[in-house]
Image (tube, helix red, strand yellow):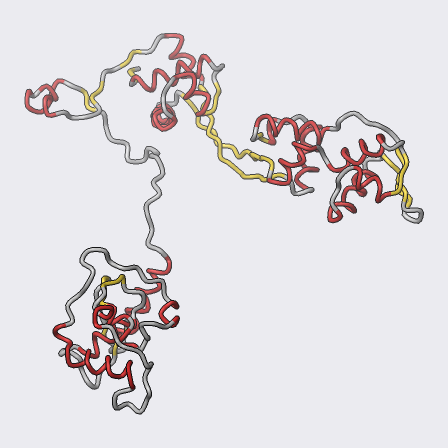
Length: 365
């Protein structure tokens, strides 16, 4: 039977590992990527040379509180050591203080100390008495293992440590996640082929310009595409939820007969502020963060001279609106300052001054 090079390497790695191994172990032994091994495995399975098994494993690690326990020791162990230090018997408050146990952890720590039979708690006298000084338990051993390894799997633990895992999980100091593990196992046919020897066929996996021009592709065996072969998962970029929401709102408003108003991102201060009656020397302008353009600094207000003069008078003395205005000297230079538009109401001002304004009309921005 003829095999491809990656299939041969996968079989040889399986043989070296005793006939059964995970993708991760096969990758380390063969030097092939997980994806390459998986593609080879699917082909080998189709040829009845290997079986692919999938199983679930529970991987776990310490959370923030767990890491603190691994570093300082379990609270009940710290309290026990403090109790030994102060003579084996003490007021509960004194023992907790000596162990630096916070008030929020006091009841939990005392509970675990009594549950493990390390000390006797006298609730009436508010005293605590040492009963024994035990060696580190399985839960403490597992904490140290996690501190050293970072992550462990439940399935690799012995029975004692599995009980400790359940205890630590109950204390909510570990995080768990379920993972799928794929294992490859040699079949009888696979073992037989390895005994007889593997013949590797040379296949072309990519048609190069040279192969096409020279016509040598006719002499080569071209690898068939396997559209079912697993490929690396791609995480494409997604549209931001808020932008999706805006698009939905836009569709609904347009469907109701509204027209969308448009305007520039780099705006003249006149439209962004002055036209909305925001005084030039007043904290009212600070409700928006405004960014000034360095180059060019000023925009052209020539087309808006008439309305600009009216806005200027309104700011200074109220013009003929009945208002007293803001009572300051309006700066035409400041009105022409270019900024990054800080709100969309500036677009409304531009639309109202536009020759294309429809009255009656319905608009949104």
